[in-house]
Length: 113
Image (tube, rainbow, N blue to C red; front, top):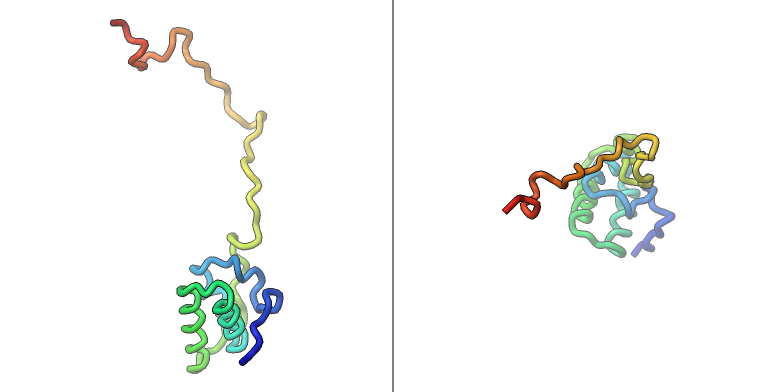
């Protein structure tokens, strides 16, 4: 049995953070060896059924004569980017809004009885 590859030995950077929906396009450029490495790693670590099925399907296709596309899909926005927060600042926010001095007209607690 082959040794299970370590995270740093995988053919896709940040493999653990790739959404399963983008995985088929990300592995399209890998050969049998690369897909096999990912499959071994996945079975030993996450063992997520949908991911295992995607990898098995691609491996079977490659063994059946499918060819790697030559390139993998580029990094997706989900991988490697951090959230920076809101771009709103006091200089870009709208004017402050004050309620009318007599209260809110539609508030039932302020209606005359």
